[in-house]
Length: 84
Image 1 (cartoon, one colour):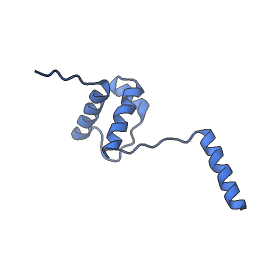
Image 2 (image 1 turned 45 degrees about the horizontal axis):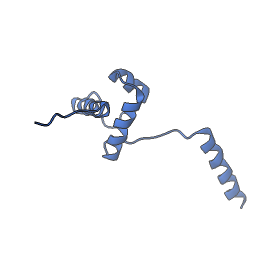
Image 3 (image 1 turned 90 degrees about the horizontal axis):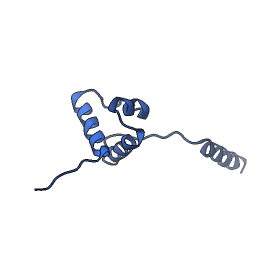
Image 4 (image 1 turned 90 degrees about the vertical axis):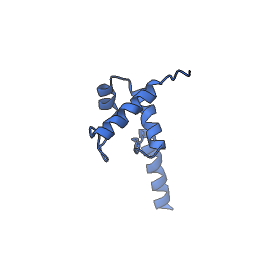
């Protein structure tokens, strides 16, 4: 008999899938890490891991905010291209 161990990431994913099936989360809802982690009683790390896996399966989209360094790099590139 095989004993299955579920990681916290898998448990979080399962719970989110139940929330989707039950209507607690709806397609198009914005998923805020801090709020979801608090509601699930977990840290943001397993939540992020679960959401990353769900995104890989096409179940959600992940958006990240650019860092200040990214913004400066993009601005410099744009200025150079427009000057060109």
